[in-house]
Image 1: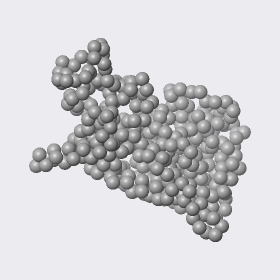
Image 2: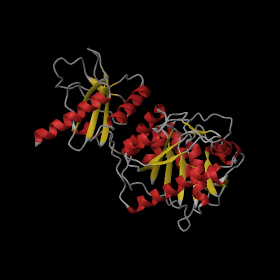
Image 3: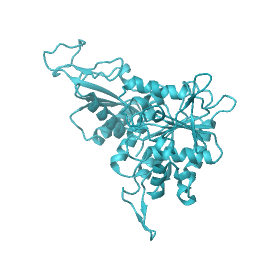
Length: 404
């Protein structure tokens, strides 16, 4: 039996190697009995951004191999012969070209050697830093939904605004937080560019009300023409302050849901929200083409690692319908459905290319509160999201299993 399990794990490791194309930078792959895969990747220590992109892409592809539950990565950098090592190993394997060290992408770097057996500590690297329910709830907010996309330009803010507006139209108490610090677009899309949040008696921000919902954006607090040249810690501070130091609601009369429009990618802002905010669930937005879908895998992997349930995927720009009723799939066809199936998630909506949606964003009147036919897709999305959030409150958080 033991030998059989060992062969299964080896087959999974071989499948991962094949899925990644057996590249020279992939030093080793191991899979344990729980379905956790560990990839040892050699990367350039001088380019941590490229190393991080390589890591996320490798984890996304490895996570799609059947039987793999979680993926962890150990990033190493090759040391040249004769270079003084930062840490000495007394059991270097024969024929080793030199010691390797982990790139400094984590607060506590660890080191491994080529050919050396990975320790239990290394196997644990990349485990979720937030356990479900471990972050205290924010008074006055019942549930928090983050709308995310690992790639920019896919219509994430459009979905955030129209979803929030559609939820508010049902009678729910809704808040909308624009966490895209570097490119705040919510004020334009809600027609509130000139609004300035007031301070309350207890020195908290009073959100700007628009279209039946409470809203906050860094765009309300800064010059619209000035670039936000902020580093990670300042970005994190701004997001947490708009969350915790604002009057979204009260314990007696809380918001039913706060929708957070996150910036694209999986950087500081997204990790801060996923790890330090009591997020109820996430919604991932994509377009049908492969260049966007590849990033969906990375986004889903980030939420899995941070123990945030993903309730589904929304595909935007799904098709254009001409006056004769013919559908034209300009961005590809069926990509969102294939990715949702691969991730074991529901495809909650396929939003077409409509002039009314674009005009609504430009004029500050969301399409979800406009023409009935145009608003239909967002109202149906709001219904499914509300059901998904209610389901999470009555069941244990779902585990995303990456499968073919």
